[in-house]
Length: 291
Image (cartoon, rainbow, N blue to C red; front, side, top):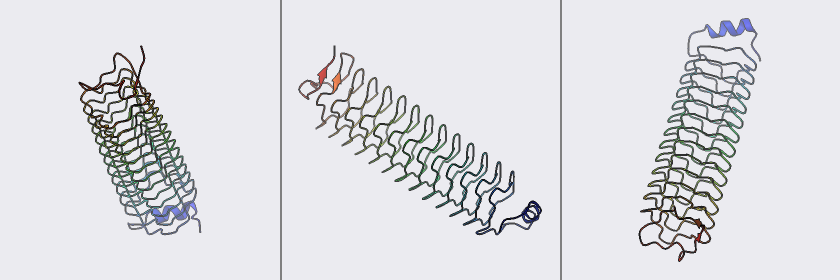
């Protein structure tokens, strides 16, 4: 049953925390509402307006928030596991420490959102807008972020192991010490991204644009970098053991002191300004010199 405006007003004035399990609040005007600790599991909040609402520690597990407006809402430590946030507006929302395990965030707007320490394990974030979002230390294990916008996002120390990041926009993103082991980054845009000390072991970076990216001290062992554009990329002290660099562009790349043991450089393109480790012969390794 849906609540009338009068009933909703009376409901919000009841003693806290509010018990609204499975309630139908579709289209409700809850702008600035005090919903701290509210029990909203399974609730229908389709198209609801929750702009600047206070949902700290609220239970929204399995709630339907599709197309809901949560702009600027405070969802710190909220339980949104398995919630439907398809095309929801969460721009500027505070989701620090929130539980978003298995949440549906397809096409959601999370630009500028604060998601540090949030758990987005197995979350579906296809085509989501996460530009300039703070995801530092967030868990995104096996999450689907394909075609999402993470430009300028903060992902320092985030766990993206096994995540699907193909065709993602990560231009200028901060991924220092992030765990991207086994992640799919094929076709991603990583220009100017900071991946220093990141774990990219066995990651798929084929056809990825890494121009001017910082991969210093990164672990790229057994990574697939075939046909990747590594022009002007910083790979100082990077571990490229058994990495596949076939047909990769290495023009102006700094590989000095990188570990290239058993790396595949077949038909990789390099130029006079490409820096290799002392004693390493790129021609012997199968690379092609471009005058």
